[in-house]
Length: 326
Image 1: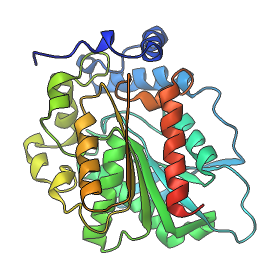
Image 2: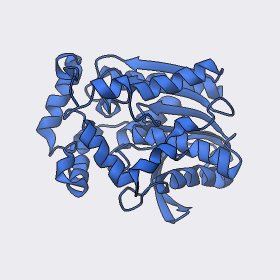
Image 3: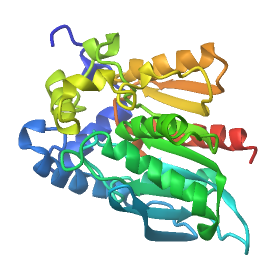
């Protein structure tokens, strides 16, 4: 697509340093021409360095829950020991990666920091990836993890009536999509008290930010977007009509949790976040919207070098604690 902004000349010095470090680490996980299998290997290898030196927590447990199509691996992060009989609110973390990449390890540092800064358990969900499991599988599995915690969280020291979703990119999408699915299909999402949504895609297929932004530095050029959508759905053309893909065709004016929405200045998905925030603000849904200047999509991974990443997690944690009254 022509007429793009020269992003690399406008990002912050810290963001430029991050991209230089990314280039030095491993194969390019943004290169969709490599195919999804090689991209996954590159993504895991590239994220390993960024996950080093994460906070030490009281307990981290690999576990599993029963999902609609089999076992879903999860990882439970406890920032402090829970007293006997104590039930804590908790956050379900849903990782990004275009519905094609990522696992529990690629987002481990993010989950540890979020647990540390909120002071509550975080349960990361390892939903099945596309194209092996196409839409709406990831939505159903994300909802299933929250439903399990709602029913049986007490066995893990979790108050199933006070849950939240958090996620980055595709994970932000899945957190909101699962909330809407629980509301509309299961008839109950009132136990989801808060959403922490970092630079998500929520349904726009064209926007000013999509026209102006996206390139090899973030793997979100138009042809990259078509690649991900082609793997996510059997027929990508139908996604605009699917309520748990194009989230903007749902009624977002009622029965919505409080939302923290973080966008990146030079992200082609920036307008998705701005649009969602505008709806929340218009209809009185508790919301905090922040657009972090000088950074690109996926900046949350770079807490080792990027102040904006640490600020986004800290601000989200503050919003969460205030919303839950902690």
